[in-house]
Structures are given as C-alpha cells and as structure tokens.
Image (cartoon, rainbow, N blue to C red; front, side):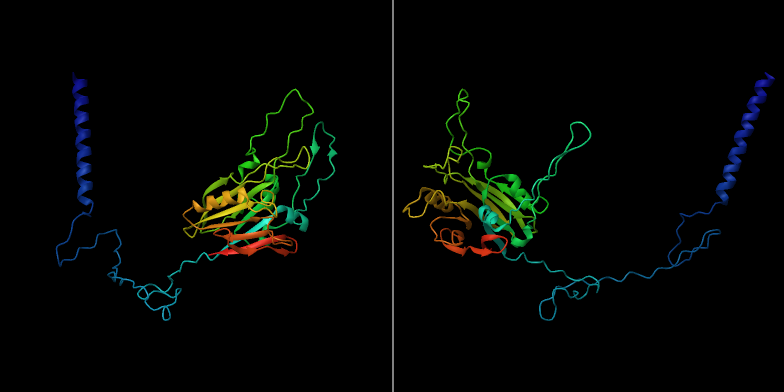
Amino acid sequence: MRGVAACRLARTLAVLCVLAWTTAGSRAEPDLTARTRAGATAAPTPGLPDLPALPPLRPRPPATLPTDDAENPANAPVPGSDAGEPLLAAVPFGPLRIVSWHLDDAKAAGALNMLPDPDRAWRHTFGAERRTAPANTFDAAALDADVVLLQGVRRISDARILFPARDWRLIVSRQMLSPVLKPRAANRFLLDEVVPGRPATTAIAVRFKRGLRVAGQAHITEVVVPVETPIDSRAPRETPAALAVRLLVDRKPLWVVSADLAAACPAGVGSCGADDALLRWFGQQDTQVLAGGTTAAAPGGCAHQTIALSYPHVLARGAATPGIGCIARASWP
C-alpha cells in the first residue's frame, strides 16, 4: 500500500511541475495577435525587428488605344501604359503562293536526279548487308510556294523525298493504293498472265505555315476513264484521278485541285467526259476553286501546264524554269 501511495504522489507532483512550467512560459511570450487601438502605436516587441513602412500604392490609369495611326504607329507604346510594353500588330498572312508541277517535266529538267544506290558490300559478319537509302539533291524551297499541285506521281516515296514530312503535308490520291475501275479478276491458273500497272496519279503538298490549315479533302474519281489502246500489257488501263484539298487561308476557305487530263482529254476531241465531270464537281462547291494541272488541248511548249480560278478561266500558264521544268505559278487572292 505504501508503494502504491508513493507512486501516486510522484505522478501528481510531475503533473503539477508541468503545469507550472507551461504557465510561466505563456506569460513570458509576447502577444502577437493583439491589435492597437486607432491612433495608438504598439510598443516594440523585444527580440523582433521593426517592419519597414511601405508607401501607398498609386492607382494605374486605364490604357487607351491610339486613334490616329500616323501619330501612334503600331509598335509605339500605348498612352498610359509602361514604355516597355509595345502594342504588337498581327502579321498578315499575305497572298497564298500556288504552283502546279508535273513530275515528268521535273525529271526531264533534272530535278529528280536520285542519287544512285551504292554498290552492296557484304560485311564479315553473317547475313548483314550494307545499303544506303536513295536521296535527292532538289530543295523544295526553290519552288517558293505554299501549295504544290503535283501530277505524275508514281510512288509515294518519290514525292516524300521531294517534300519532307518536317516541312510539308502530303496528300496523295487513293488511286495510288487501288485502281478506280475494277479490273478483271486474275486467273490464278494462268501463271503467264500479266497484271497491268497503275497510272501516275495526282497529289498535293501543303507547307506547314501559320494561318494555313488543311480542312478536308475529296477524291474526284469521276474523271477517270479507261485507256482504249494501252501501249503494252503492263501499261495502265485507266487515266489519272483528280484530287481536291479544302484549305483555310487565314480563316478563308478555298478548294485547290490537282488534275491530269492530258490522257483523258486528248487533243482534237470536241467534248471530253472527264472535263465535264470536273466542271460538275466545281459547280457543286459553295467556295472558290483553284485548279491546276495538265491538259493536251493547249499547244506546245509549257502551255499544257495551267492554273485556273473558277475553272476553266485560266489564271496562269506554265513557263520553263531552269532546274525545275515547266511550272505554273499563281497567287490567291
């Protein structure tokens, strides 16, 4: 019993000592939450530095936009604002530069000189063959264009080498993947049967540029007609299809069309079904249509390459350019 009483007494003394120490510490601490009365100054608190007095904030006058362009140019500071904050004017997009280019003309002018594949050399290790992919020395910046209407595209890789993906968006006609006019099914029992080749089709390359955006595309297959007299058994059995791309040029809609009607509409033919089908498609659109491509109706030189606005009103005809070939240039609007 004496041991239990001694333990209780010791515990009580410990609690009293803790309470006494806490009360003494709270009396020594300054009251930081106390507020002084109006007009009275607070006594300096020992151990804490005095805060510096800040000047009152000056209200900033509202900025007014300039009304006279001659007195207040676009890059001049706005009255009432800081001198280091100029008013930046929006840079206009400028006219859209469009060219029409046939890759056969480009090849004849030397623009498609692919570097030849180097000789294949076997390494000393088993099954390893060293091969370098072909490249082209042509720079698409020489065209000085935002949109390129291409004809005579036989392989997507050739067009992609000319217009790399880091600077250009390339849209190719679906005719590259499958023919428009379904051919006769091949007989698997005739091993010597030759499958006809695919025609050189159309494509459109659009440069990545602020204010220029691709909003849609349309594959105009109504212009495709069968080839009556192919050159040989491996020659294509149909004419090239047309490709249309809807652009937003500084938020203004515009259709651009690449068409190759040289084979579908030969020279000397009075009426052409492919030309009529293209005109019907143009009439169904509610925005302006700018078409470029080749036709056999124009005589000699580079006149076969044209660009028309509201087809068939010719806007520009082709001209021979060194290192590029026959190319037609136009701007919109």
